[in-house]
Image 1: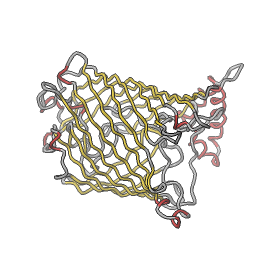
Image 2: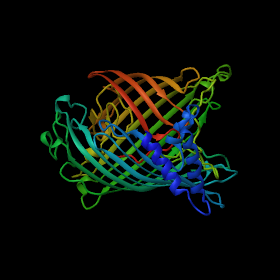
Image 3: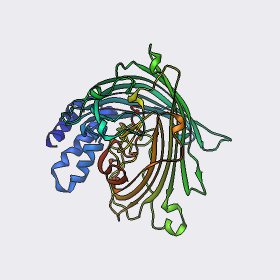
Image 4: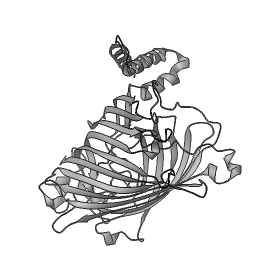
Length: 462
């Protein structure tokens, strides 16, 4: 930690020397001045905030995919406001873990303020290129009937380079309730044998027929299109976030792995403050929202001119916070005759998936894998006094299918969870959850979200 502080201070000093100070130089100077206070006991909290949130340099932290550990590195962050109301923010980061896995990428958001700074009524563009190398991803086979006896591992690397756009649609001049979403990605996957000494490698138990895509991994072009709806119901008592999306995975020069996918993701949030006026006196905002114009390392909102550290500061609250969140998620894949969905692009349930999303956490990570998935999840989270700490309980039911007919409303696997979360200002979300209720024991999970609180997600790995 001391070496990181020294590095940031030296970088700020060397890069901030300029005859005519730019915004970038100004941010460096302010960060350098903030780091000088790290030796004062009374400034420890502010120093910690600068180290993990400061602009333009800060420490990057977060959990990589399950089994690959906690990553730490550096991030470079900046933003630019233009006179024509266009705003951009960008970041570059790189982290590595103790098992030699790593992730590095560059991200840029561009949007235009419109209608009196109502940025959510104007198009949003996202450009990114991210590379990742994971030394452990577990594989038990495909379908809902696999057993722990076929537990193997493989190494996975990928580069995802692409762009997406969100175009809000306004009717009769009102604030948009839905948006058209479009995406175009180039995906460059690579699979290698596992390196765990006590778990067999995937190629020792599986072949191309039982793990499609094991023998070769072509480059994929992936366009997608969809519709996002974000209305509120019953005078703000229920917030909806619905996404309906179609993806096409075109394998370059190899139609054996080309397929299409439909995703339906239906999220509902009920802030406890909105249930009644009497509760509203005691409750503040339930959670910091995810702002689509923020990048993974940036939590500064729409961009404010000349501000060196726009992320919200960690602070105590005198009001309670709480919410009920409900999610229904359906994913179905369509492969033509003679084609198969590559196993590394099939979603998983059990523990967390390769993106770090929790699904049936009482089961081992990646426990069930298949091209079709159905999940129902309910979470209640509530703050513990004035501290930025919350308690949560969750209940989930889900299933994996090899065919679309397998995804029916019966024979679900279930899981329950309880734990603590930390939401401190713009800091990454930290969670400690103990999950139980499945047929394969219990599963403790500790994670650090790889994105700052309020920031948009990184590109999906499948």
